Length: 154
Image (cartoon, rainbow, N blue to C red; front, side):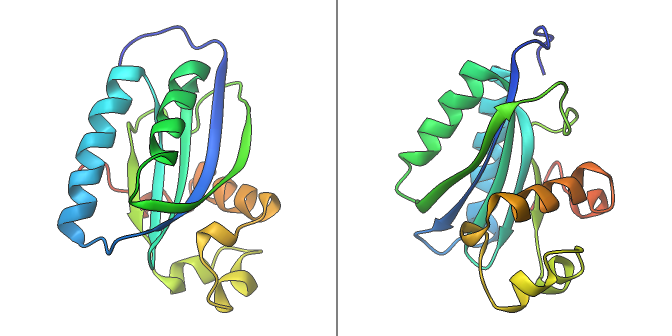
């Protein structure tokens, strides 16, 4: 990570559906490219993957975060892009990760307070409302789920 000033930070939280089937190798390649680009732009965050759905948090300088989000929104491997939250932040929640990753299991998602009913209906990340997305984000920020996050593999 570069040592750019930590002013004018934002995060964008979004979800999307995979247009192609992602196997472990595909996810690893996607993460390698994302981590390299994020490192160059001083962007950090997490990517959750469940059953063909992505939930991602990008945080960093406003122009860099928006640049990455725009690139992803044009990527043909993603559909149903939904920007859930875009707002300024005081500090990073995932400052140590150019892109932390978790391939979630339904049992993990059901155990997050407030989200168990949502995921038990079989919905995916791209159906998340802002309030549910904030609960999921808080669950990771407060440390309850950090053990699920990988920083070097899938």
